[in-house]
Length: 393
Ligand SMILES: Cc1ncc(COP(=O)(O)O)c(C=O)c1O
Image (cartoon, rainbow, N blue to C red; front, side):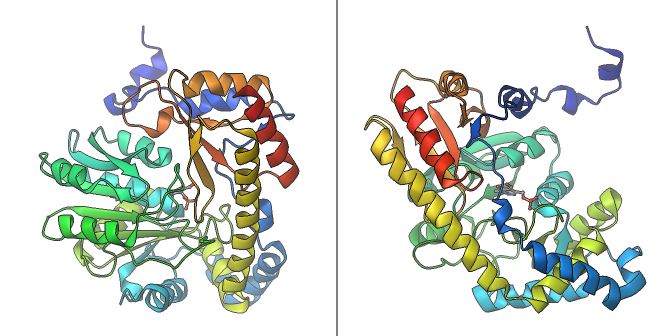
């Protein structure tokens, strides 16, 4: 029987599965639990003092502008800063006009889905893929076409056959230090993906919140950003400065598409907080932002190493896992016969939380994979948590 509230909801929302995350969070409320399950950056990654100064400075400098309605596209100063950075670091050849400031990249995912998807339209996603994106897209009732992700990147043949499906609107990728696997597409794989999509009328989303958090190796060029008009690159300050200020951005050279997305944003929240934008802009232009990112990188690299060392000492050989070159996550696979969900509940009994792999897939199946986050626990907690998991395994 529907409740009276359910009678008021739309079909798409009623068809959504109950939030897996909410259920899991309930199981991990105990403050004694060592949690590797979330995706939070370390609080040490927030440049607190500098941001505090920028708050006072921005009020002095920009006065009432900070508290007034503003442009949907975002403040021009910040868009220019982002365009210059995209050009300097990646040679994208973009201008401020190609940039829309969003309320985190999460909002960009919602806006793209909102303007492109009719129910049943095709969406190609990595398998496993970022849960927050899958949940957002689901609200628009698409047909998912999952394509396998492996050590090298996206399965190119799988991508080509998924593209042959009817009404495919976009491909969603996280090419650097992917959430949940920590995997990075190789340079060769990026070229192969580009060759498959270059003459297709489809949107490629390159979602890159972790790209600057590389511990090892060289920065790789994007798959198509800057050279394929229907490419939408998503960036965020959440993992390099602060997630709480909710500032992300979208880069797209297709002006018609960008304007359409901006119109959807206008209806949604008019613009991203100007206060956040000016404070962030002040911070970025009066501090050594690259130096700050280098500190985060060093911190995460040592946390990641602590976790991998503890895993190699405590985990049996039957458990395999990825070795990320950056980002925030390690992805583990249990031996045959085990399920991640059973393992999750057993781990909670030992007061350790992991993120079972299930919600990172488009169709429910009893999976053997789980995600570990190493950025939001101390080294002592990492060693102790992994020791407990190792005993369990
Ligand atoms: C792959 C990916 N995309 C987007 C987001 C959303 O980030 P934000 O909205 O804070 O920019 C996250 C957050 O964890 C993520 O992992």
